[in-house]
Amino acid sequence: MTEQAGPDRAVDETARVPVSRAMTVSRLVLGAAGLAAIGYGTAGLLDEPSYVDKWGVGRWLLGGLLAHDVVFAALVFGTGWLVMRVGRGRGPEPWVRRTLLGGLAAGVAATLVALPVFVRPWPPPNPSALPLAYGRNLAVVWGVVAAGTGMVIVIRKWAMRRREGAGHR
Amino acid sequence: MRAGGTRRCFPGLSAVMSRNRIPGDVPLPEPPEALRRGPLREGAFGKALHDPRTAVVVGRWLGPAFAVCFVTGLISHYMQHQPSWLSIPSRPVWGYRVTQGLHVATGIAAIPLLLVKLWVVYPRLYVWPPARSVRHAVERLTVAVLVAAALFELITGLINIVEWYPWPFPFVPVHFWIGWVATGSVVLHIAVQLPVIAAHWRRGPEALPAADGPSRRGLLAGLAASVGVVTLATVGETVAPLAEVSPLAFRRPRVGSQHLPVNRTAAAAGVLPVIHDPEWRLTVLGPQELSLSRGELLAMPQHTVKLPIACVEGWSASATWSGVRVRDLLDRAGAPHDATLRVVSLEKFGAYAVMEMRKEYTRDPLTLLALTVNGETLNEDHGYPARIIAPNRPGVLQTKWVDRMEVLA
Image (cartoon, one colour):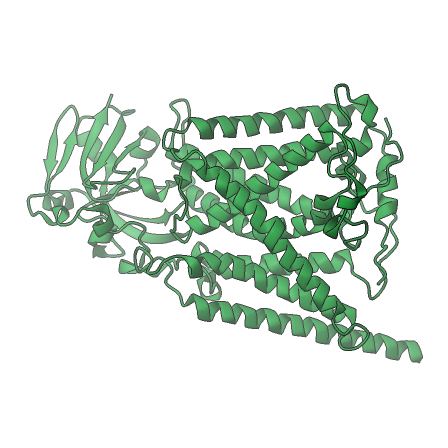
């Protein structure tokens, strides 16, 4: 696969950027502001009278980080690898596979947003909260995403064929 | 100052400034090469799209999204915990509705944005050596804080809007304080990466991707589609005309008793059966004390207003309310023009049983002690026998089941 689109060259570009005084001052000001905000948030949290379980937030912070870095990212990279490698040279062309991965990403994003609805205990506190049939509706979203992905592939194939046809003339 | 010819993807602070120029930095020994396994191996990840330019392009969308969430979050916080020095206007009428709708919609859109940003930079997690120097280790630690705080805000926010609280801490203050940590971390990250951001702000003279190869445009199209899908799927909870095309919205603006969603029911607030007491009277404690039955309130001049109930959880819905102007009640009680009003609910438990409103709200002609909604007598879940409805105000401060009002000095 031609995956050398030029990031290395881009790094050399960065190396040649002269660090101006304005840049240094901006960085110092931004850095100080950022650190101040982090300090304010941390101090405020530790001072919060209603915040009793002092390790509860730490567990959730670390849990989120691990859930992404260890579990979610591994699944994403694994899926990407599988979809691009399985039956390489045969079957769908790489751009078709990438388009499918794009559709998959949109479907997964919608699923993640809806996930708390499926995981939370049922029923919700009153009938006006969570009033829809979320299982069926998520299936509808996946259907729309699949249809959109299919359309993108068909249109691109058609455009490529047209271009090829024009090239032969 | 120039980098010492380091050839690394994503040069941070370290690559742009020569290591020796930072006073007090301590180089760390490189761990044995034998430990460099799995994702730590050179070339374990493809390079395409895991480059600084892509990170900058995605970051340019993610940064503003976080800024919107932070600012709208602060607005809600200070409207609910109004400092004495801050005067909050009662207009525009839709202020709270729009800012909080934006807070939640932007937070939901930030989920695919953050995940794609993390996908772009993920190979950096396995950079070798893991820490070149003490400063490099600190820099990487701040990135861990950024990622943890950003994920925390999006995850807790998303779970909160389905009215579920599976954590061992109070949501409101913790989401607020970690919001400061997340925002501060973003600003610090921008400071650290500023030379990289500046260098890649415009497209460089890169080789165009092969016709069949992975392209940045393709990635961004997928990202835009994901943001579009999650936004359209949920935004109908506050943009009523889109309700029908938002299959995953957590509320529907017209779904609920009396065509209006409810957050806290009378049963949950523990006001049953007190609110049905036929002897109920509204007490107004002021220079002249008033005691008014519901019939006497209905005999006063009635006003009709169209105002939204807007919840911090991102949903909002317009309704038509009628009742007595709060300022008429205050005038009748002989309250000074600039008096602050304390409103006390019959609610037994909950943080919002007592609410205060200042003159900007009490003197607004749209602020009512409402007796009806959408043409019907308020039902018990909407605050029978009487509730407050005011423009540009958090839903939790639209006090239901009003017991008494106290004019404060």
